[in-house]
Length: 437
Image (cartoon, rainbow, N blue to C red; front, side):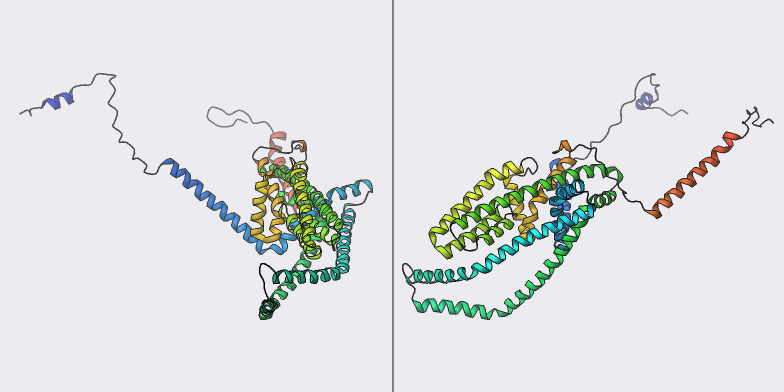
């Protein structure tokens, strides 16, 4: 007995016409991401920024831990970029070997700096007695002013304050002793750092390219050339900054020292030397050292001389900020004054006076290198024809190993190619795959 069929089964069993496409399967909609794309991008930037900041923090921590080594090496780099033209001139003109030329340049610099310090020290020893007498007179005038209007302090009150200050100094004798001990340790570190700086300067001057080649050779082969060219631009920037800063420091020292000499202040030469070395810290150094000259004028000659000295310091600062810095730095060290001020503040916060001293040249070099690596060449006149040899000096063991490997590879190729070159030709194969005689 046949089973009855339903109309739906009849429709299903009907043959489909040829060429009719089947209906597309229904795809369920993708689930909606609850996190917006902007939040995802911000999160990606955030964790990458945190990683970069952590790496920078670790680097700064290592620098502070190894500052006894890092600071002398940084000073040696500044001295090298300053003395490199002198060494090249001695090597080219006088035909001196590079080690001898480097030694002559370093010794000449040490004699020059030592002579300036000796001159300043002699002037300080001669003028310290006069300064002390004038300081006592100034203190007497200060006490007389305190006793008069508007404070009207009595002599007993002033003596009470002075005795309290003396008791405070005596009570902190332990801290003073600890400070003296730390000063002794610091002097030892300075002496050791000076030796390291002189030693590194000598080797940087006569073998700097070899050291740079070894450093570049540590990088992957594909990035060596770009790093070398970027390093050349950074070196030019460092040289331009160092020479310009020396010129600016000289102008500051001459201006403030001449003003102190015209006012007949004691210690005019030591003040000029202090201003010269302090001016290597942009903006802040000359102001701080110039304030020392203002203080000396106040103690020795009163308010009028102090105001005149302050005006001289401000005029010198205006000349430096609006004439010397823009025209001398120019394109080589293109850092905005706001960036310079922030970099100096950050460097002093991290490493004190040393950080303020090296912050600006480091920022200038990093700016030049990063711009070159991103396609902006600040010194196109340098070109790219200068290439560094990543292994400028021969290594006997490595050379023998490479030569042996090359000979073995050549022998293997000769053995492989010999039958094909000298043996009988291979006859064609038959249809059954056997070779005929």
